[in-house]
Image (cartoon, rainbow, N blue to C red; front, side, top):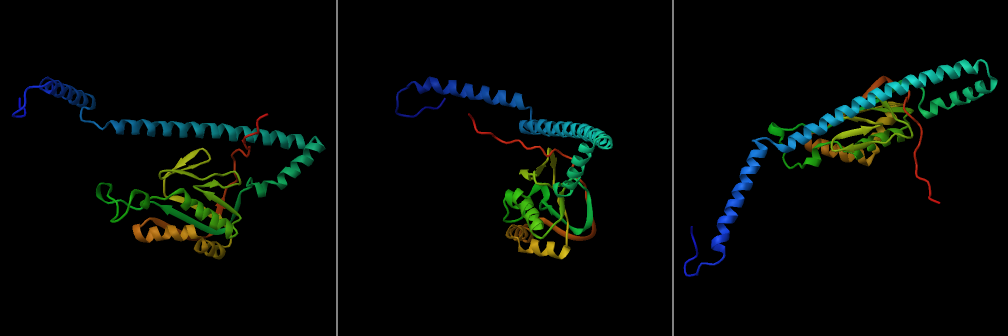
Length: 248
């Protein structure tokens, strides 16, 4: 064991072997625990499995809800034939279906697709890019949606889901959360409306212009396609609102 020349033995003479022994035990325990595997990847797999299970549960509950809604609609239609009051209320409700997004629509429009930038070998980023520069963000999707509404869109979908007043676009990393479901890029937004006006609105939206700068610099995906017919399904989710109330 080495010690400093010219100094008498002190307490460190006895502490150093103990520290070395403790460090050896820690390294040994760490090696035995990991066994050469990435512990973080195990947690990642558990999270992916949890997301998959939750998505399956959401789909099952959604199918049950649609079935119950059909039963309610059938019962309401049958009752309206027997009760004038129910018939009047049903007529009023039918008049609100279109502005509420509860009626399917078809017509000319645009389809916009946003995608992450391709990675190099081993997931390498493009030169000069950071991790946040090469993925589609929430504000990018929102910028496209806002531009299409500003351009006079009559109806819109994101990933095939009807966008209504209660729809909220949220992103976690590069995953889109919409109405209880998760989506990975490319994110596809379709809108019914005058294609020329919709394109002009996209060109005038600052958020879209900023995204296109990143497209040019880092090769993110941005495609705009004119369609003679865009199909937008009726919204079949819940329109109920939950909100806070002032305490007494």
